[in-house]
View 1 (cartoon, rainbow, N blue to C red):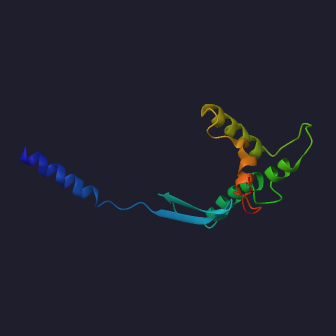
View 2 (cartoon, helix red, strand yellow):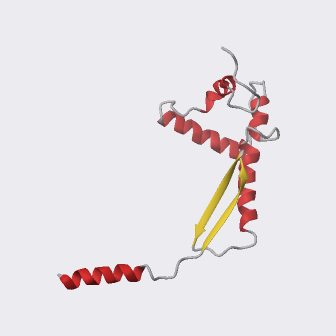
View 3 (cartoon, rainbow, N blue to C red):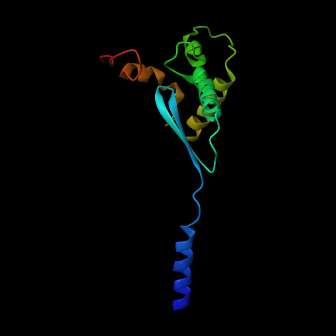
Length: 130
């Protein structure tokens, strides 16, 4: 029994002696906030940061509420009820959001924008007086 305990302690101690995997940490700004990506076991490459930023920029161009040129902003400005072509990223995000709204019985709902504006949680200024 005593030998088993010694063996377990020795193995645990030796496990801490192994070489640590390399770690890459990247960070930047997107969607009005900051992001950090940490990858273990990867070697940094000169293009990794730019590749991540390019992917995030695609999503930001589609979904940003703060960019006047985003697909979401342009779509929300349309007053027509005619069928509209939309950016593929926007279409995917809306499909996922609708699924989440259904699965949560509306607890998470993408149609809450009028309340967001009323309460002042947008870039347009202070809350409205009720």
